[in-house]
Length: 184
Image (cartoon, rainbow, N blue to C red; front, top):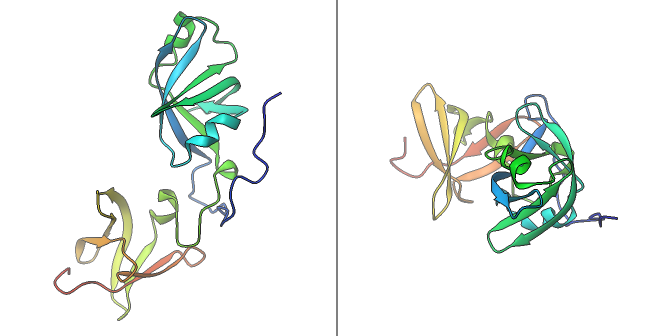
């Protein structure tokens, strides 16, 4: 019997909204691991510990459900044994597939933290009431994330910093910003 996460961490749970994905990728199958059907998985989540309690994952664009028979995290990757894949040849067929989980199984986030899909599509307004457009992309840099808003002024790069992003209202679908001098 696999151990379930009872309360993985305190925080804000994602509320489903129209336009959100039904599944979110947490890993990508790299290659077979050994000869008993296990696969090596690139970890695509900030919560690698979740692999230790997975019972089911959803594979590929069709989100085909697969039971996880066993799993473990080793350094920068995970190793999973999925039901129905019992040898290296069978496991090899999974190479390149995304491992997904349903939105409702996402880890709760701390106040002020957001999943990328929650940010994409938000309307961006300055505190002076100027509409900058909608967030179309998140760029991950070494220092801080950058939100790319596309609107009437073209592309505007918004550093995801507390003194720049003043408020995110997911219910209203809006982000309020104070742009640094010269950014517009």
